[in-house]
Figure 1 (cartoon, one colour):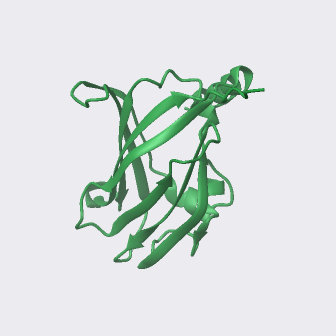
Figure 2: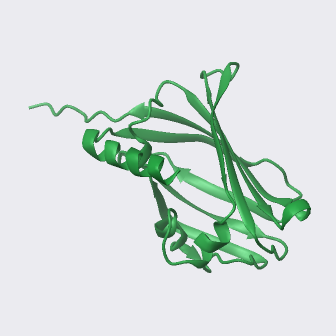
Length: 183
């Protein structure tokens, strides 16, 4: 997996593909879970390979680790009638990322107040002026589809794992084109 990420990062820097990401829907999959998401994406950005957002996690009860994050991404036609599974993955070491000083989401995690750590304590974790840098995946053939992504958070060990977070996202991706200047 690390090799794939490094290769993707290398290729994206070599070919410097630029894309605009438009999040068309972002909702909680379920309501009766300990971590609810409330995020607003700034789709007005004209910065390629970047998604600006703000919002918060609302945690209603203490969530003990370990914390696992799973992502299921499907590539669909724009009507959402025909979809195919594109990629699925999970990371069972999210507490190490939350409690550490480095990692894939370090820059985004730094924008939250209070800082996200395991265990998650009840309260509101607010992110202001945050952004995801997606340049490492910009070379993937992604435009022309609606992407349907489900992000789930599971907490606990073994058979005691329970769903604590679920977020459903729809996004459209287009190639970034600079506007021609008229002289």
